[in-house]
Length: 298
Image (tube, rainbow, N blue to C red; front, side, top):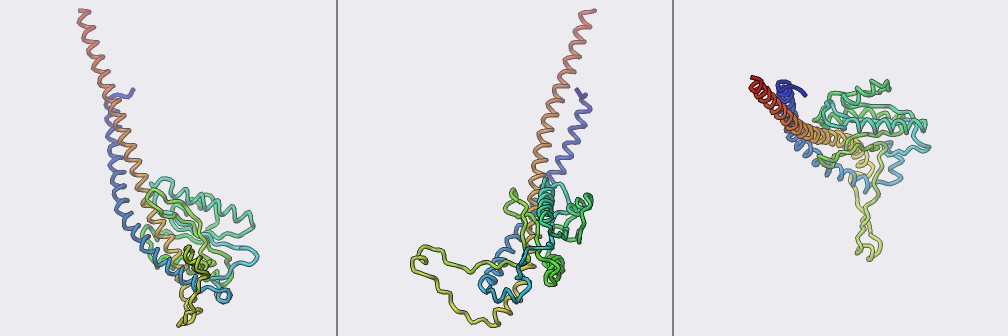
C-alpha cells in the first residue's frame, strides 16, 4: 500500500487533471452552440437548392451539364475527401472517420477503382502519412470555423477535374451531426449531382382525387441558365455542410469525452481518498499498538 504522502500527491495530480478536463468541457460546450447554429442555418438553403434542381431536372438538361453526368460503365477514378479534426481529446471521433475512409478505399480498390485521397485535418493527414498511403492533397488551415470560401477552395479543383473527365465521382466522408451524443461518420457522393425526383403529393386525399397536375411554369431566364448557376452552388454547399457538421460533431464529441474524463477523475479521487483514510487509520492503529505493547513491556 502506498504511503499517505504518495497518495496525497496522486490526489493533487488527479484534481489538476479534473480541472483541465472540466475547463475543456465548458469551452467545447460554448463552441458547440455556435457550431450547431451554423449547421441549422445551412439546412434550409441546402433544401432550397435541392428543390430547385429537382423541379428543373430533365434528361435533356442532364446531357448538357457535366456535373449531372453519370458514369456509364462504372467509375474508374474517384476522389475521396476525408474531413477530420486538427486536435484530439475527442474520444473515437477521428478514429471512426478514418476507419470508414479505410473501408471505402479498400472497397473501391477491390473494384479496380483508382482513389485520389484528399485530406482535411491534422489527424487524418498524420494517420495516412504514417501508413504510407498516397495523398493527393492535404489541408490543415480550415480548423473548426469553416467558411464558404474554404469549401469553395476545396471543391473547385475537384469540380474542374470532374468536368475534364479526370474524375468519375467525388465522395466526402464526414461526421453527420445529429446531436451532441450522436455524430456517426457518413460517406456522401457530391459529384455527379444526383437530382432528387420530382415532388409528388403523397397525401391520401391527393391520391383519391386522381393524378396531380404539375403547372407549366414560364421560366425567365431559361431552365438551362438556372441549372447552370445552381449546380455549382449546390456542390459548394454540400462541401460546406460537410465541413460545418464535422466541426459541430467535433465539439460534441470533445464535450462528451471531457465530461466522461471529469466524472472518472472524480471517481478516482474518491477512491484514492478512501485508500488514504484507510492508510492513515492503519498507521494510527499501528502506533497505538506499539504504545500499548511498550507499556506492557515496561
